[in-house]
Amino acid sequence: MRVLLLNPPGDKPYLRDYYCSHTAKANYYWHPYDLVVQSGILSRRNEVDFLDANVLRLTFKEAARRVQAIQPDAIVFLTGGVCWKQDFDFLACLEIPSSVPVIGTGDVLVSKGRELMTRYPWLSAVLLDFTSDAVETFLQSWNARTGQSEHEGSIPNLLYRSGGEFIRGVDPGKRYYSFPLPRYDLLDLAKYRIPHGRRKLFASFLTDFGCPYTCSFCFNGKWDHKLRDLDNALQELRYIREIGIRELWIKDLTFGVNRRHSTEFLNRLIEEKLGFDWITLSRVDVMDEELLTLMARAGCHTIQFGVESADQGILNSIEKGIAPERVKEIFRLCRVLGIRTLAHFILGLPGETEDTARQTIEFAKELDPDFVSFNVAAPRMGTDMRAEAIRKGWVDKDVDSVDNSSANAFPQMEIGSIPGRRVIELRNQAIREFHTRPRYLWRKLTDIRSPREAWRAAQNGYYLLKTTLRQPSLEEILDGEA
Image (cartoon, rainbow, N blue to C red; front, side):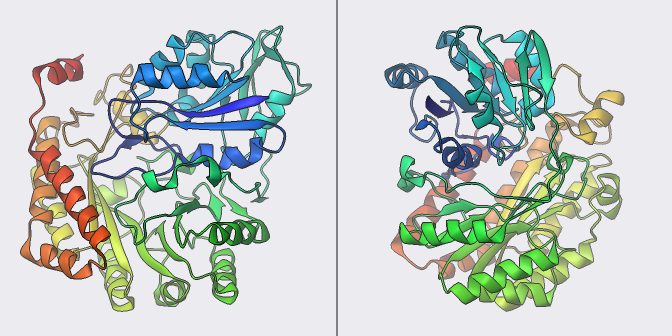
């Protein structure tokens, strides 16, 4: 079959991958990684096309013309809670015949797949784990005449129709997984960038999948944590190096959480002398001096940490399981070892007050990370926080489009202890206060290593401050109230 992997167009730079959709805050846009992984899997038996209409900044009409020109036999598309209504409007306007299977993946579909498949009959299936070969199996069993799968039994990691009924295939629960080499040749790699990258080109990469932690605001703890076969991982790294890429974004949600597996990976990375620089995500209670030292030796230059709040009570209420003092210690160790840090904060969590929000902003300045991300608490679909918010009346149960990253977002929740509009004001204030400090500006200037980095830093700073200063229009306000 000719399979189109589609990242739909949008009116904003929507990042939809790895079941955590949001809007880019500045001038960056990374690979739609779910589709990147599927590109290798589906290329085993199919002809694969890749259309990232968002990074190409295509209008709806331009993207529709591209899709129609390809004339795919099947479409696999990425969506998310931040923009799913736009995405579904676009797919619907394509008037796809029932003989062409349309498979979607993304956070909103994992949470509301059956409801959306009922509302939109053209949606044939929902992929529940982008590292699996479920779509490949589904396409092999597709009957174009009936517009349904004829697979006997259930297909693991897939929600689909068969015989007029919904079937949700259960994950087999394997501890290890692997997948074929992604088709990076299908992407225009020069168009993608990340704010903490060192080089022009980078590759997204995984050594595990899922997260063993259950923070109430996060969706990714809903999957069983599994590990990637390291022979398979190193095979991909050799290929990435061969095509001239020297920087990785290791997208593990908590790198190092399986100490033995991560240590073996790091040692093999050092032994093979592939010379990668890389970025990853982790938790402060997973890191220590020994592991951080090994990571630095293996080429790690930046780690993202979820700090969330400076208030221990709030951290306990969201089941984060960390302490501010531990945060300080790990950030200090990173600085000593020459590893840059990116700290994520969330304002407006349950229990937030004006005082706790100010404490968090001041804590961010005290930590002084190399990068910072201030977000607004959002009742993401499928999370425990959403269930609590609906139960306590903080949000209407029908609110299903959420964005915790946009500077001009509308209040996602009204938790009672601080107005939602005030949370957004404090979030934008935090961005301005943190990024305009002389100490921070001086460090950013001295950290620049090339004209390209200088230009990218200037662009990101411009976009970030521009969006936090812009006031929403009347139309946006009315849309937000609706």
